[in-house]
Structures are given as structure tokens and as C-alpha cells.
Image 1 (cartoon, each protein chain N blue to C red):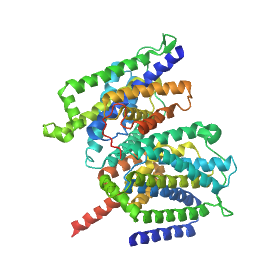
Image 2: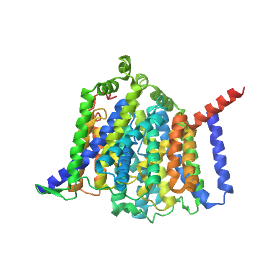
Image 3: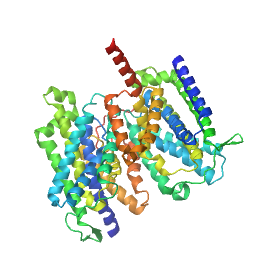
Image 4: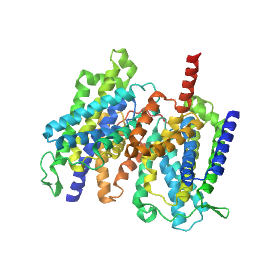
Length: 314
Length: 290
């Protein structure tokens, strides 16, 4: 836990430094999106690394948060905070409906059910034009307003998102190291043994799934206000896949690995724009290569590599 | 009456395509327990090769054979280069590899063929036929016939030939199959080739109707996957029936409910199936309720 606190303090320090000294709005915009992805990935990492379940529909929860917040504020004049709370309600309800039946079963049923759910939600965003604006998107979402303060600059959003992310990581770390987290780890290794210890494993998995969906929904609400415009193309199956990829690339069992993966996959496309249309080609190759050569993820894989190199030298 | 017949016929046509793709999913899943998310890209490759060969003036039967054979070769390459080196990794890692592959193959296709849809000539004329008040293009009938022949040929292969029986033995219990002296690796390779060939066939025969585009595989692949889950993922009969059921229900939903939500219909069926009868229509009852 000590190391985790150290790493978290370091992260908070770096974020504070960037926030204070960076003058470039473009960097803030890229980093803000990265921080929101980080929020989603923290939840997904809990779900995948601790409960051993995969969600292929997290972009849908992200989208439900964004669209509920966006529609309630832009079309019905709700205040951003009350819309955000309503969005949390909608996201949790959707997660309950999918999670309760799917998590009763062993195996990767949650992955298949969330895949279907994700595509359905995407089609709804695209086709319910009266409410969502359809393929051309939802415009006129007001900026975020909290405690009488209106967020207008990218820098203000940066500080808010950074604070929320640090709090979310703190929460996730404590959860993972609590009796609840240990029960989850046990569940990951042997479901039967965990049941024998008297845990209701279905409920454990459901709680983690709800937490991860809520975090994705929160990221979506924040995104809607920050971007002030949302369209269905941000919430496709490919985005769900990218979230899962971030977690796996970094290393499923580690929160920090997942954050590393999020950083890498968010920054990579910005760099790859020099390849223009061929960026997907490079992205696919990197993804396949990492999975083949470092199946435990970059975080652990690179650590092992350093260790081996060191041994070779001696 | 003509209306419902029309919906049924178009449902059967897309159902035949889904059935071929679903069968491809099942074959790879049975051999490796990998859900191959690059399956849809094999469909796209088949259609793209077909469009290229036709544009170069090759006769249709030759173009057809070459397109299917080249995609089967692509399936073999995919297995050798990506799945085989990572065969000891966890299932989720393998699934991510296939997702990465799907992005990679789609990117390659865009690089090679561009973003514009490529036309493919119809195999047997364009003149629509009238069947009891419904109108069908001849290509639809051809799709149905070829899919049925392919499925039937696969069934004979699995039931009557020694190799087919060995593949079924591997699917049932890999270790026991090994103990009987069956070499598993070549069978895995064969299953990728077969699966890619079936998907390529689906792409080739649908291409005169939909044209060939670099991103056509994603949606077809996901729907084929839904069909395979509907049929139980492990059963080849189930996945074929799942494909036809999905195609017909989708077409009816688009016709009578709302065409805008056509793409959602398949996935609503998938989710409902997982919630109500997760082992699928014909799957083995190995799912344990907690």
C-alpha cells in the first residue's frame, strides 16, 4: 500500500505541475480526454483484474452518461449537477439489468451480453433523432457548473478531472486492499473456494460491475459538458474494445498498468496522425505484437525484461 | 401475403450469410476456444478479392475459387503468425489478439483497395424473379443454394471423413484426442483455413448485392457471432439454424417494426437469448448456474 500511496502522490504532483505550468490549450484538451479515459479504465481494471470479468460494452455506459447529461441539460434545462446524478441513475439501472442475469453464470457471458448491449445502445443513439440528434450529434450542451462556479477554460476542467481521477484511484486502491477486494481476488483464482468461504460470488461480481459502469457513466457526463457536443461515433463497439485493450496492454492485474495502457493508447493516435490514414495499420500491429510478446501486459512484461537483461549482464 | 413472403425471402438470404459466418465462428471456437473477432474480416477479404479478380476480367468461377482459396490462405497465415505463438496465453489475451488482427486487416484492406465500394457483377443475370407476389433477384436464390450446399458439405466432412471425425474428437476433449494419437496442431490450422474459406464464401456471394467495402466485415462478423451464440457456439447445426433464425427475425423486425432499428434487432435477440437460455438453442448444457 505504501508504494501505491507514493505512486499516487507522484501522479498528483505531476498533474499539478502540468496544470500550473502548461500554457498550451491543445495539450490540455488531449490530457482532459486522457484523464476521462483513465477514469473508465480504473473501473474496468477492477472488473477485469479482480473480478475476472470482461465488459465489451463500456463505451455504452460512457455514452449513457454523456447522453443523459447532455439531453437533460440541453433540452430540458436541468442543472449540470442534477443531470449528472440522473445520468448515474440511468447508467446503474442499465448495468443492473444486464449484470444481474449475466453474472449468475460462469464464464464469459458478461462479455457477450455487454457486446450486444453496446451495439443496441449505439443504434439507439443514432436513430432516436428527436432526443439524441441522431448521427449528426447533440449540440448546445452547457458548460459544467458546480457550486456556483462555471467551468469555461480547458485548464479548469483539467484540474477538476485530475482531482476526480486521483480520488477514483484512491478509492479503487482502498477497495482492492479491503476485505472486499481480497474476496474478489480469491474469486479470480477460484470461484468454488470463495463460495466455500461463505461469499456470495454473484453479488461480489455485480457490485464491481456496477462500480465500473458508474465510473464510465461519470466520465461520460463530464465529457458531455467539457466537449459541449456529443455524437454516436464516440461510443461505438470499437471504443469499448479500446477500453478493454488499454487494460490488457498495461496488464490486467494492475491498476497502474491499466492507466499506463490508457495513456499509451490515447497518446499513440495523436503521434500516429503523421501516418494519416495508415494509423489504424500501425495501431493494429502494435496491439497484436504486444499481446503476442508480452501477454502479461507492458507493466509486468517490461519489468521482467529489465530483470532478465540485468541477469544477462551479471 | 406477398409482403410476408418478401420479408421471409430477404430474411433467408441474409440468414444464409449469417449462417456461414456463424459456422466459421463455431469451427474455430471448437478447435481453440477462441472467439475470433477477426471473422468478419475474412468475409470482407473474400468480397475484396472477388471484386479485384472480376475487375481484371477473370471468369466468375475462377475468380470465385481464387478468392475463397486466398482467404483460406490468409486464415492459415493468421493462425501461424498470431494465434500459434500465443497459444499458451489466457483466452482473453487471444481474444484481444483477434480484435487487434481485425483492426490490422481492415487497415490493410483500406490501404490496398481504398475506401470506395467496389462493384462485383451478378453471377446469374440481374432480371428479378417473381415468386408468389414477392420479388427476388436471382443472386438471392444463388446465395441460398450455395450456402445450403456449403453447410451440407461441411456436415458430410465432419460426420464421414476421418479428419472431420478427428476434429470433432478434439472439440469434445482435446487431451483424450491426443491420447488416441490425433495430432492437434494441423487440425487447428485446418480449422482456421476452413473457417476463413466459409466466411470468404459468404463475402463472395453477398458482394454482387452489397458491393465490397473495406469496413463491411465488422457488422457482418458481429451478427454472425450473435447467430453462433444463438445456436450455442459449439454446435454446427445450431449455428447454421441460429443464422437463419436471426436473418428472418431481423428482416421481419425491419419490415413490421422499424427499419431504423434493423441493426439492433440481432443484438436484442442475442441479449434476450443470453438472459433467458444462455446455453443457446443447441448448445451443450455445460453452463453451471451458481
